[in-house]
Length: 443
Image (tube, rainbow, N blue to C red):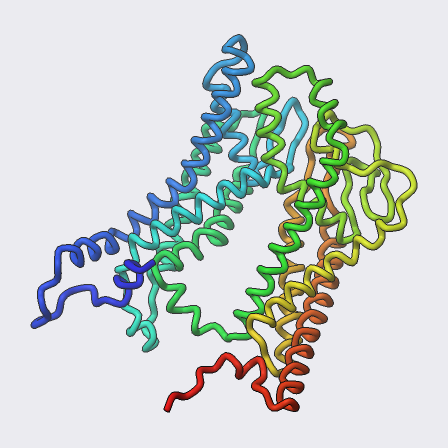
């Protein structure tokens, strides 16, 4: 970031009469003024191709380990790996006439992480383009990041479309339109912020965002991180309590070491989906594991389930414990604690600002969680298994309400505590929390 900011703040060329620049400065300028269109396009293509190659290599190794080349062909294994990468982009795939639409969010996260890392490198490489920080502060428009973002997305999408064309068959029929849509969304959600950060533009633009909006977005992030951590812990505890069932499922599948390793990789690919299922359970609406089923704190109705180890974390059917209903207070507590911590770090004396920050951050967190939940389910098999996943609309309503109320209560509670502390300090003649950290003047 230091070299990026130097290139952004430095003029692009030496002016007349200016002292000669050192070799290191010239090298830095060359490394940050690479061709924008070419660099961003190649960056987008690399961001798409890297996880694609990983998926294809994993499929090839898995085919050789489990089958030792007795059935199928290397090209078929590579095609399976490419189809796995495409399903991470929402393509869906048809297997033996059954349409599978669920998205393995673990692979999607891998793709998003790759886009972020490559986007940062591309941003550093093109940071010398456009006006410097002083000219941007004076109001001059800078199109470096938008142009780089567009061509980055174009490079990513071209690789995705090519992979769809090469891997698709009449039987599998992945949806190219959904692949294009997900490619653009990944490039916009992960690539564009990475380009802005890597090029140094984010550091220049961020001070222009209203402080209230920055604080609300920071609180939204804290609530989401805390809530997903709680949902992950819930999933791990549920799986640990019934680990024997998961081990029994694996033993009944009669898999060897290679098959067990592939089953483990498949399980890891859908762990984020399971975390979002646990989130829907804690929020109250719950989720379905087949048509006519429901898993929620209020009721557990299950039918026949496939032999998949992760399903051992599901609660048993029958009477619901009395304490299960109290789980729906968890999102309110998480949001309240996150808001209180945010106000503790950045206090405010205005009640209305505290309320806007807490409630706004909670509402935004609920909406974002709803968007994530919307892609967590789908069809995973024939018959009853075409309906698997949370009820998205109900999850959004519960999340917005719980996070909004929790954020509001936490923000107002911390503000009251801070104002009470300042008032008590003034009555005792001592400096309050806001003034005790100020440096005293020296004589």
